Image 1 (cartoon, helix red, strand yellow):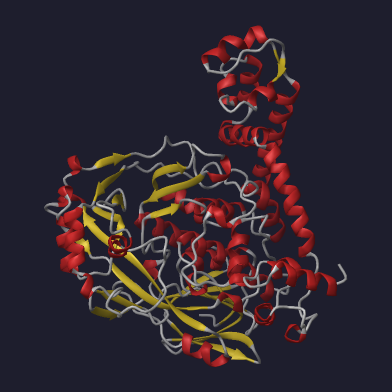
Image 2: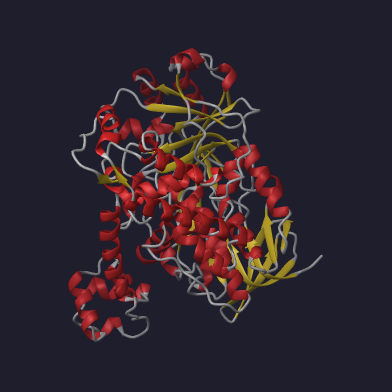
Length: 625
């Protein structure tokens, strides 16, 4: 048994798994410590990965050599591309997963990763000397030494669960909370607060009248999360189902409000606005007579269904009575009730963009401890924190992701610069360069970086290069090939597109909104022949990528120009250059915020809430710009 490592990761949730695997792949000897080795990468809430903006994060994790996309593909039981009727900047992949297989696959990978070791225990104390982390002390009294430590405690720090007026300590149902770390870090000077999240009831599928539900199938099995081409497990695909609450349901729920922890003063912490509990919905949207609920299967070999939309901390009897008013649930049986959980988090403005803490060198935070919510946001942070922890331990330069390079960069920048006043969830609207941050090209944006860092394998890097070669050749072909009017007009008229009077470049036809490369290939033999030369495993993504770049090139180029202009401000370094408290040209709020955050650059300063354009002009003037 060894007691000295380069990196220690505390917690094996989605952040911890990505952090530990990234650190180990970079060659750092890594120890992953978790309460329960049978609960690795547990899907504590819904059994799904991806969604609006979240799907883009998963593809970015995969492009950087992370594992969430691969594990999701191996556990997928339904796949959907959300927002496919909108522009490609809004397309967001989402997969229902077999939650047992998801966890088992993560454990299989971690147990077989070189340089990675696992230990089942709690961590009660960090070993800190001279403002540098040196290791951890566990609940069993063991002392493990390390050069870097990544803390990914999820909802376990002083976790408290609420079932109506009943309160139970725990980080997750039937799992113990973690104590000691918050108190130690607060003594050092860290600022901590409390947040709240919730999870819905789990329903027994045998008790549902499925004829009274609306079936929702997934898309044809053509998309996947990982850019690797051989990762799909081919599990049996399952539908979701939709039901609706009604006025009787709402009447029962209102009866329980006096005992609701959200309304009787029992819960005082910050909860998510965008994912409200069912009791919050009936209060906030009192005029609505029904709310949509989704029955999501938790696996191919289980009768457990997650009732998305029915998050609740109401008393258990109220939850059951309310469900019974829904026709499909007249004879409902449940496996466990919904509940709310409160837990500690730390103000993320106490972090560098590397996710290393400002107060303790070598200590990194990732996941819900930073005030975020969601598996995907946690995993993205975990990958960055784990890789940087390893690089620091190995004496290498750390890396960061910019806002125009990745949604993960937007996420981390928002946390570090703006902080949080509620659980942070990624939305496409948070990214000012979302046309550049599409899900289809995350590999083109990030795989070269991942390869240079050592996170991406030679195989994955060569696959990206091959895809890019075929994409560019297809774009070049479309720019060179001329289509004769007499050869294409019958197809155009059938497709509802204006016929041609003269020949035209294929690229100009692809620019038409109603036309696609795939459709045109059915009418233009040379195009069809070219597309068929693309390797089968790459063809769909190459065609999609080429089509997007052709159709949206004007928008993409314009957004890149804006991003390049803002990036010039990222090069104006101002960290530790000014005594902000003495700069009378700044507003009082700006002085206070700049002292607290101490931004690296003018661009970072411009994103701090309370720092106005006139304040930025003062800083530019003082910087000689």
